[in-house]
Structure formats: structure tokens, C-alpha cells
Image (cartoon, rainbow, N blue to C red; front, top):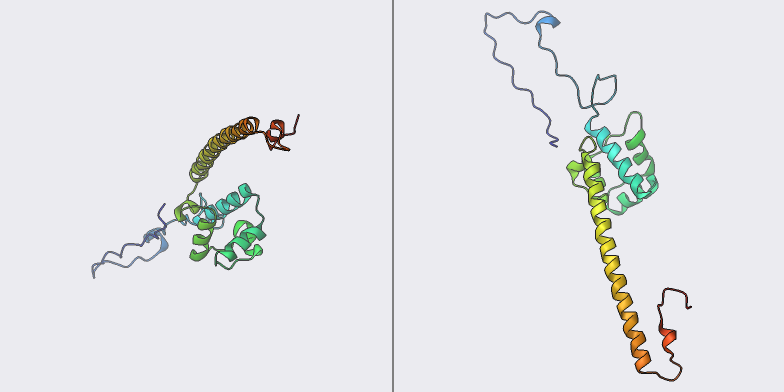
Length: 182
């Protein structure tokens, strides 16, 4: 999503003999404001600040973090923030604006690209959910491989102690270290 601000085109030159617009009806309509949420501006879609605020609240929520932890993490990253600022960004009326350095900090904190912080709709959240699911699958596979390696090592140790009994060593003393001894 581009965060570029549209630049109005320069007015077309008027001929010297053309009359100037005399009333509001003769003037072109101003473009509708679509970057603010709320009935006061007549917007139909949330603006970037609202999208970013919702994304910050979402990312904070899935981590189980309070506003204090987000503020602490932002401060540790060199972006001064207090818990009330996080709350005002997410829920304030009017909503607290997010400065560029803060937006960069939030994106880094949550492992997002800057444009993902401002991406409307559920696309970013669905993409993030897919990334998290892939991470879970990868970690489960790694855990299964680690469990197999641990079982093999315990088996090897038990076989070694059975083959080489020593004083005070019994094979049954070298069973799985994580479970109860039968």
C-alpha cells in the first residue's frame, strides 16, 4: 500500500475573457476526505491511522501483552513511549497520531514490514496467521526430530551401561531422564 499523498494538479489557465466562478455551484467539488474515520468527515473506510491502531492492538493481543509491555519494548528499542500513549493510539478519542519513527518501531517490534502495519482489511492478519502456522509446523517437526534423537541417545546410553557395568551402575538407573522410573 502506498502512503503517497495525492498532489492536486495545477489549475488550468483561464482565458482573460472567461468569467471567474461566481458561486459554489460553479466551482468544482472538493475531493471527499477518505483518510479519516468517523461521521464528521463522511468517510466510508478507515484511514491509515485507524488501520495501524487496529493492527497494533491485534499484534499486542495475540502476544498477550499489555500496553505497559509494548511501551517497555518500544523504549528498549530506542523509541520513547509510555503505556498511555499506546492506549491513546489504539482507543483514544481523538486517536493519538503515530509518528513515523514510532510506526517504524511498532513494525520492528511486531516483526512486520512498515506497509503491513498500514495494510487495510484482513489481508495482513491472514498472511501473519499463515506465517505463524508455518512456524508452528516447523517447530513441531524440529521437536519430533529432537525427541527421536533424545530417545536414540538414551537407548545408546542404556546399551552402553548394560555392556559395561561398573560399580554402582545398573542399566535400569539410566532410563529416560524425563519420565518417572517404573
